[in-house]
View 1 (cartoon, helix red, strand yellow):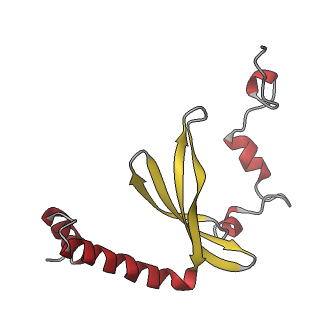
View 2 (tube, one colour):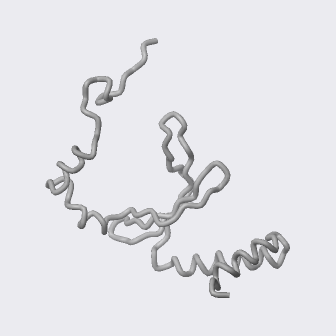
Length: 132
């Protein structure tokens, strides 16, 4: 079976995407200036390694509602790119404080049950009080 070539692939004579190409497009009606794009969502705000996967936290928006999205990503080796999986949640950004408190409570409970090492407890204490 013949290998199918991707349309627009550099081997087909298409010009590869470059900084010059991007710079030329900035400011066009389809691509507003960088200053306007800074406020655009989604915005990656955190990454946590989970085995061979990553849990990514994004600020995003859906139907006008500001959301915090937590989604599991896997490394797609053929493209060497992280790809979002179907596993994830989005919550209103107004609940982010409640989520942080619940995670902190879960961490404390896991520590009480002996599920977290003493080193992790010390690391957390140092992170919370860097001056001590």
